[in-house]
View 1 (cartoon, chains in turn yellow, brown):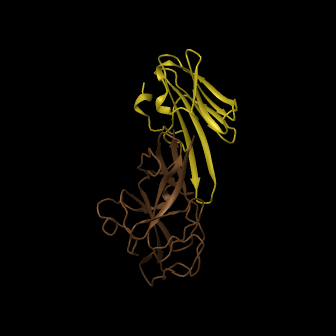
View 2 (cartoon, helix red, strand yellow):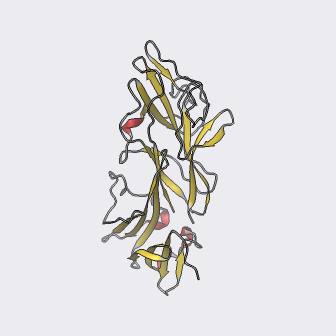
View 3 (cartoon, chains in turn cyan, green):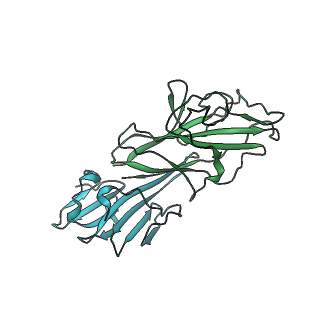
Length: 120
Length: 173
């Protein structure tokens, strides 16, 4: 089987089965059975985030588009917990920043709009 | 697996959608969507007060791809007006479209009731962006408009001004 091209998310369920964004809608993830949320590129793992049963999680692709034709992209993986957030900002230039919370005063680390199913 | 997103300039009565992604849009005294540097409709430098370009109603549009939602849309400049002396770029947002006619950008002239208060575009920079309403759930969906207008005062110099870079930022899942 050929690996998908480019960046994509993958969820691994508690039974070991996986869904990836190439063939599964984000809204179709069975969230209460997710054990791990990962970001991959061309089939290679970029980052993998464990998710405990009491946690929630989110994924976003954050993109800038400029009128001079340049763009940049950051992939956000977050484990949302009442006591132990872990938020990964994985930039496509290779930089990976780990934080424990969003910062609405920062140009990249501000909170996305949280979907209802992502709330804890 | 990702949304295809374009920056659009609407003009005309329809309006007509013009894809200006990666292009430099000219601000002049016409309701054109010129990205080639055409100088056939210059703005006359006033003896006093301000003269205005026709405003430019721009928006973000999803044109294809596979995605669930695009939201958290923001807009900003580099924070420094490099257009030149006597030139100000004003910006506001609106949920509605009004064709440009060369009048000053304000809530009376632009689709009364829907326009936010115009502000100097260069007050919005990376980390201090203009929030733009829009939840795009399907191909063809668009954000609210970001409406721009160049104001020219008597201290401006004749000729083509420098260009400025404008950036949109959005989240996608």
